[in-house]
Image 1 (tube, rainbow, N blue to C red):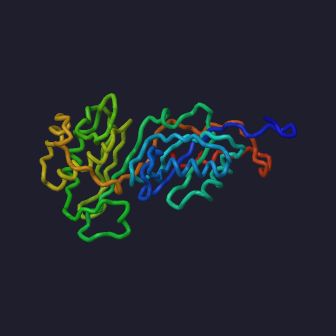
Image 2 (cartoon, rainbow, N blue to C red; image 1 turned 120 degrees about the horizontal axis):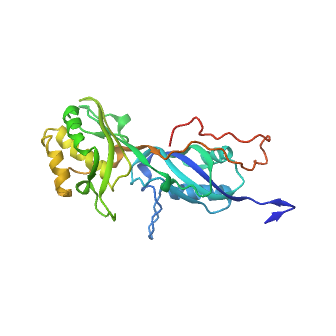
Length: 288
């Protein structure tokens, strides 16, 4: 459609890197049902539509559960607009709520899909192991006063690295073809009585898998279970043998590995632009 000889806005596709505080979100994905649910995807889609006047299609590289945070979630955004990537990120961050922000934005090919392109994810679970509570860590850490032994947990974590059947660590309500997954790295960092971090990297994860692994390692770190029990739990494929699910507030999606290299694409200029092509705003930003 043209107006006065000028083409109207066309469908465009953008790669977004998102940061959010998951405390007041009921997860990433829009939920069906009569009860309204505040989700990251839902808030983002509504904000894009309010800016562009067109419905948006947004796909995340993965779904985070209610209460889980993200430092660099990756999403593909398809919408009809004449905004450049640089204008879009400024406009979105001016309208989005305080607990959600776009850290980077770049135009992508129309067939680029964040979920399909995701090759791996890095999660971090944070525990505060101090004797007294920490108000500044209240919403980002699980507080455990009982001493944890990072050495025991690190030794046990080795059982989970590699390709295994993680059925014992799958949360209820999952509908997957296979429970076999690959963990590339599982590191325990920090010290007893302070901050302890569980760094988990892999190609894909089952529902609640990271939180169930952490819950199991905590039982070992407390000395309640033997280190060798990690192997037995994994081999059992029995969720009842593993530890409790660690609370969502301690979990953060740190990054998504998708091979993005910040390709330049010809893009229409905003009416207010000076005439030079917009620089991709995530060329030097964090890898999604």
